[in-house]
Length: 95
Image 1: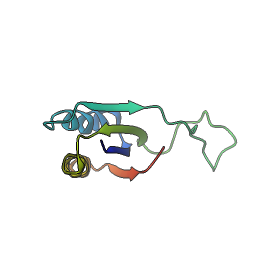
Image 2: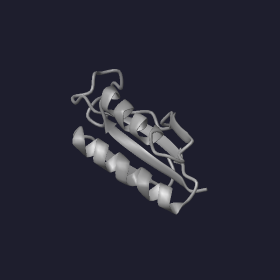
Image 3: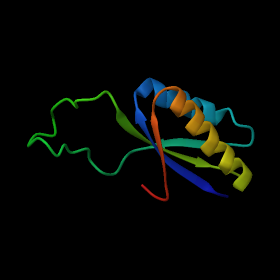
Image 4: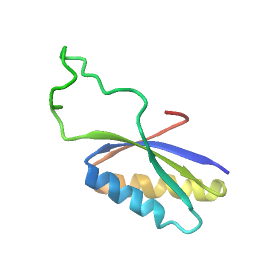
């Protein structure tokens, strides 16, 4: 079974919209948001506790698809819904 891993960059609400859309694809049974294993550190500050300058956060999502056709559908839906909300969707091999 193919595993599609992606990073969604945007608001919590928009990430939830993408995740819900992925749950709605027939044949997809496993959609999971996983913790980002790399702590978010700011390059421009000595303090990682400061509020970020933008509203965008990174959400890591894994989707297990039954076959390559469903994996392509997952990528298409994520890109469509994400772009509709102005999110960045990045597909990765591993987190």
